[in-house]
Every structure is written in C-alpha cells, then in structure tokens.
Image (cartoon, rainbow, N blue to C red):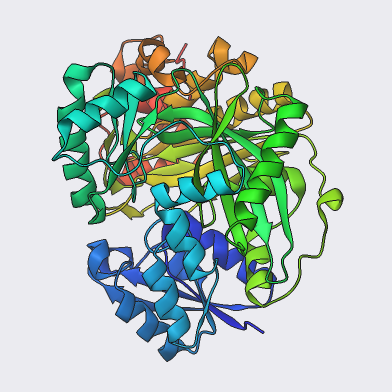
Length: 503
C-alpha cells in the first residue's frame, strides 16, 4: 500500500493533493524550486526538498532530480498533478522503471492520447464521433494542403498533434491564408513541444466545450462522473467552468458520457481522466482530446458528486477496485469555478509578479478556495499566473451564480493585479446569467468585460480617502499591516477594495 507520496508539482494543486494525503494518513513529500522555498506547499508537506533553480526545466521538469528525491525520501509513489510532467509518457515510464508507483494512467495510454492524430484514429475505431479533419500535413506539397482545406470546407483550424494550451493552433478563413498559417503553426509546435507534426480540422464556429470526467481502475471498471461546461475561454484557455452544463439536454448528456467511457475503454484507461468534446449549435458532439491527468476544474465535480478525485487516484494506483458502479454515482446541485490569475486584464492580461500585501478569501456556505498565496508571499515570473480557484456550490444554478457574485465581491487581494473584477463582470453578463454562451463569449463581450469598474469611491478628494482608510485600519489588522509596511500610493484601489464612500 502507498504510504508516502512525492508531489511533483507546485502551487495550489500541490497543496490540494497534500490535503487528501493528510486525510488518508499518507505522508507527503514536496519538491520546490529556489524561488518557491517559502511557498505554501513546502510549508504544508511533511517533507520538502530543493529540486533546482527557478526555471522549471531545472526544477519541476528535472526528471532525474525528482526521481532521486523520491528515492531519498522513501516515497512509494509520485503524483504529477496537472501541467509540468503530468502527461509526459517518458516520465511515467521512468518513475515505474525506478520501482515507484506513478499515480496516473498506463504509459501507453498517455502516449496515444498525447498524440492528437493517433487519438483521432483510435476514436474513429471506437465509434466516437470526431471533427472532420486530415492526417499529417506535408508543407512540401502546398497544393495538397489547399485541396484538403477545400474538401473539409473553410474555416479550418490548423493544430499541433502534440499540442495543448492553444499553442500550434491557427484559424484559417480563406485559401489565401492557409500556407502561411500552416508554416507558423508548424514552427510554433516545434518550439513548444519539440514536434512539428500538424493536422487540419473543420472549425466549428459557435461550439460549446464540454468535458466528461472519468475514472478507471485496474480491473477493467470505468465510470463517468458527468460533464463540465468549459466554454468561457480566452485564447483557448478556460476561465470559468460549471456543472451541470446549462446547454446540453439529458439525451445528449447520456450519449456523450457513454462515448466518453468508450473512449477511455479503447486504451484500457486507469486513473482519473477527462474526455473533451466540442458541441455545435445543433447538438452534434465531436471528440476533441483526452487529458490523461487531473484537471484544473476537478473541484466542481467533487462538489456535486461528493467524490474526492485525488483519493480515488491514489486508491486506483494501489490496485483497489472502484468502490461504486455507474448507477451509484449521483450528482446534486450546481457548482461553478472561477480561476483567479495574477494578471492585468487592462493590459492585455499581462501576468504580474510582486508581493501579496493583503488577502481576504471569501467564506460562507457553499464556498471553497483552492489556493497557495498568503500575505507577504512573493509571486515570481517563472510560473503560470494561476494563484487560486474559487468554487461555489448551491442547490440550483441561479443560486450558484448569485453565490459566486457574492464570493468574488468578498475576495480582496492587493500587491498584484488580478482578474477578480473581470470575473465579476462575467457573472453579471446576461448571456452567462441565462446560460446562453459558447466559446466566443469573452470575445463577444470584450468591451464590457474589460471596461474598468468604476471606483466605489464617490469622493475625489484623496486626502479624505486616506483619512477614512486610516480610520478603518484601526479595526482591521491586515489593512493596518498593509498601510504600515507598504506604499500608500493607490488610495483609490484601497477605496475600491473596501467599497468606501467617505460620506
């Protein structure tokens, strides 16, 4: 049985995994880069070891060092979290070759599903619908590329076979753009993934991005934990997720979840994974890809099903059968997740770095925050700007949206720019409130979403604001700390955060 787990990750997901380890009475081992020495996951784990300097290639992606630490610490298993090495088949194999347990699927499943072209071919054989597309594109035959595009029908999307995160992707609307788009996508794919294999798919113009959570054990049992709606995206990156989807019908939900289980069965999948689909306006759904890891948005599934997905992963890796069958899994209520980023929406979402001066996390019924920052913590430029995830649950969608609005209103962070106001505006957009949105939601509402929220301070006399905030600080120790130890240059920002009207 697994008794000690090394978490090969950082930030909120490392803290999240360690929490489940602690509940399961399993020791945890953290790794960290030099800039992450004071990070929350380092403080929270039972043991912590330096993996290397700041750049992830020398620390969180340093496979020999990670395995060395695992052996030195006496860990039985390695949990990769998401990102970094989580979908690296070579890493999974090297962990197993070292006599350790990799908490994830079989190496071959990672390898097949990580190659989008191979995954497409496998899905076709498994009877899972796929978006009309091509095989590998050959830039030496431009005429053939143009012919394929004409046969599929414009617009088309050029994609990297080894891709992810929107890299190596180009949307093409006309024959005049196709060759240049293929060239650029291929170059970007090579730089991002070390693999310049690209292919072409029909572009669905107003799709919904919907994914199905699955679990598979080592005894051939595979179940789904229903779907998540992930259509609120910016540059192919998810920003808000919810479950159930307000778009699909019960009939489509049943068909889609059955196909997701079939997709997982086609590679004898074990562990937690997600089968992603695109759904067009006519409710036709198509396989997009399979993520062979835990997803960022997994907490909303946990909240509505009551199943701890990290504990499930550990038990599956232990060789235990799933303790439930499909008919035993019930979903209750509605859950929404907002991703909190250290970025400036007013400056093209530029990632930010700096010291957290003050943080107040929302509390109350049905509210959960998965984060890793604290007052005084220094956010660096080395890693993804995701700093926390805000999750709410309620009996129905209307109540869940209202609860998310309230939670975002309470969430206060100073010292770095965040996207909290941006998320508040999403919650107040009529399309989102009505559940009538697709993957173009953000671009269609960009002007409203990026419009700076007017300051709640009606008084323009900054001296008045300063006096009022100083007065408030007498009863708020955290605010007083910020005022005493840091610059007091942006008084309007303090006013906005505390909803101050001096009159």
